[in-house]
Length: 221
Image (cartoon, rainbow, N blue to C red):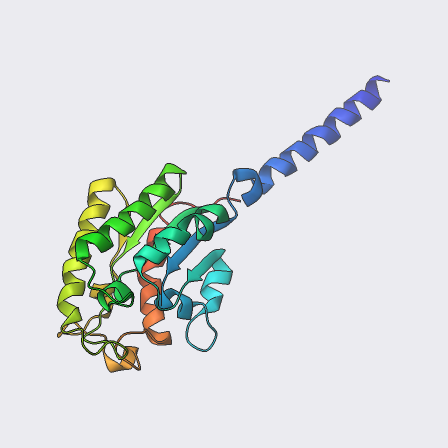
């Protein structure tokens, strides 16, 4: 009887040690994705095989939620469904290009764009999700909105507001713009076919910017 009990206890301890060594699964820890990226076509193209690097997302348990042509007001309205309900540990927010391009048919002040981003960031932070705000990527002109002049200037001014918001609230900040922009504030031809949307090489650069920031929060599971 005593020997049987000792054998049972030994087996139990071995099983417990193995279970502890495996660590928590995402579901047990309360998250499903390491990070959710939300944005417009720049995010949408990133996860496409023909334009971006879908393996970057698959290999790191990231989810890309990109909505082509949409403004930050649209992203804000979908943020609960697209980000919070996906249960990520981190949220990567990139938006503003389509606001500057006036895709909703009106001029949008950069302060309003900043406020939309701030609303999304606050919603994530309130759920315990780490927030990473991203600078808007460079462009000197939009092929679909040629009447919008000198967007490169507006983009720089908006990025100052986004960076200041990150510093004020303690969010991380990913500076894609500095990594991509040429001397004129545009997206060079070797990194884009239309001067606005990154190509595969540009996404490689963006990944080198964002990945170290995401890894500042050690992965679990």
